[in-house]
Image (cartoon, rainbow, N blue to C red; front, side, top):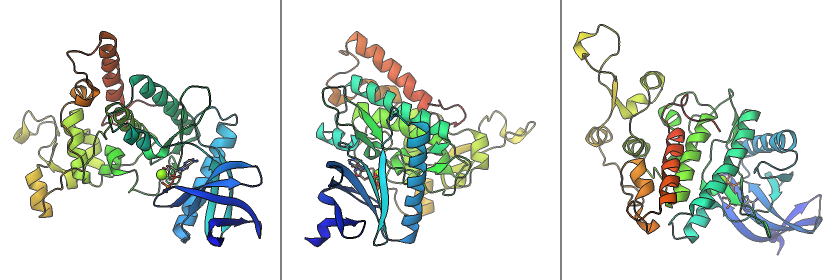
Length: 347
Ligand code: ADP
Ligand code: MG
């Protein structure tokens, strides 16, 4: 059937579609047989609208820069781009064929989370990719389990690669303010504050926690819901200087005091903002904040990591070594899901 072929170089059939691998905001990804190289490739067919086309050109240019200049030997867990070509106003990008994404992997495991050894290996590899991206001054802007793929390696250890630079941008040349997928959205992006590569480290923290516990850390049904989950689980809130300058602070916070020295009226207050209560948000939006998609036990970060029911383990019967590992994991996560982008750990 004609529509099962992607024509390349005029009437020479090169890519034969075998199955659809996924689809997102930007287009569809197909597993194709490449008749020229006799191998499978993943072809991302971008929607045929100018805005998507332009953004895809960005994806091509940033990824080819990362591949060729910053990771020429393919050692840093970033997907390889093979080629790109226009087809009927669709930009098509071909990539090396990879395996399932991490969300699919978690689903296969009934959302019970991965063993710590895999969490550790995958985290190290994602960090490796993030170091290269930071070195190149590239912000991924959409790090999430769907955008991290298993590498199919025969007879060797499990591995992952970071994909989907379709939302990526250069640090210092940020254009968009509505970026990152909601669950993985950093506080500075939520609040409308200038952002850096640190936003990827926030998303990375959310991913690491999710790999271990099996469910998203902040599965908020709205931005307010995400933020209030952050405050409840991590503890604390974004620093005052960030709140004072961020564009959207008043969507989420109420000004409760001033930190100007000598202000008697608010004696003793060390914070000048407090997060809105649900009632206040309800009154403002005149509709109830939606309940999260999943029931998710709220609680402190360490309780989530230690006492997760379907690990079949709890604090009481965790083996001593896993207990130490969990302590280290909580410490690690605290460095990542840190509200202050300046204090958040770099890769
Ligand atoms: P979008 O920008 O629309 O999110 P992605 O590049 O993230 O597009 O691709 C969408 C999905 O297609 C991914 O989540 C993944 O499941 C699948 N996919 C993408 N690239 C590959 C690849 N190289 N190998 C295998 N599957 C892929
Ligand atoms: Mg994607």
